[in-house]
Image (tube, rainbow, N blue to C red):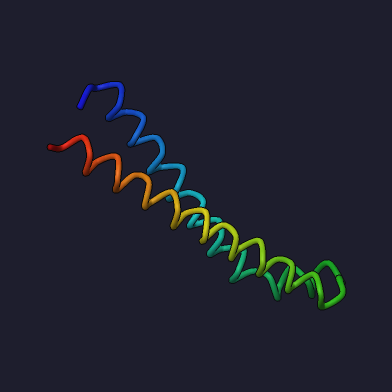
Length: 74
């Protein structure tokens, strides 16, 4: 594996980790955000869907990273 490819995998891993963290924080803060901003309850569900989409994207990204690392090791 070249150094450039390794750096790309590290960068993708950091982005994926950031998306996981942001999705988790959004899911935790959704009820509070709706209450503080006086939004209708349906916006809380929208925040949860955004969080779920972030987790699904992260899962796909982790799978891609795993496949790239596995293919480049052997």
